[in-house]
Image 1 (tube, rainbow, N blue to C red):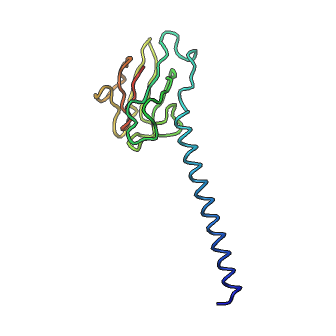
Image 2 (cartoon, rainbow, N blue to C red; image 1 turned 90 degrees about the horizontal axis):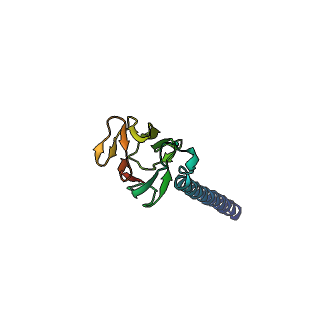
Image 3 (tube, rainbow, N blue to C red; image 1 turned 180 degrees about the horizontal axis):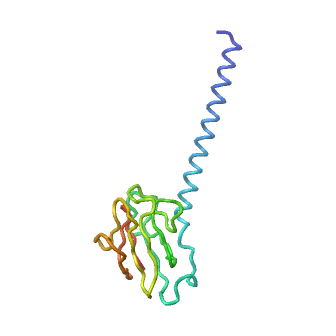
Length: 152
């Protein structure tokens, strides 16, 4: 192999290596941005957005399971709050066991209600499967996938 061909091969290997490095950096940056969005999204509702007959409530992560959430992360509830793995939800639960559209929390008649949206693994309230819309109260533990959230 001539010296010119060897130099050409080395240049191509260097260029390919640089592109692979840039691709890896972009993938890490994308992953971090998505994780940051999950931690900061949902929960920006103001108390004025809550129904006037219902006190403002929060969900606090008690057990993050296999998700990117952390114990102690908190989310303010909106009058209608969707939970699930899909990024379109009000509160994104990045857990492999959570369905895309897993559960719904809403306020009506002066109470907060929890409803399962036909999720694959079910929604649990205080370790009891939610089969129909159910009133929830402060201190209740809601499980979506492996993530446990406390209503405060």
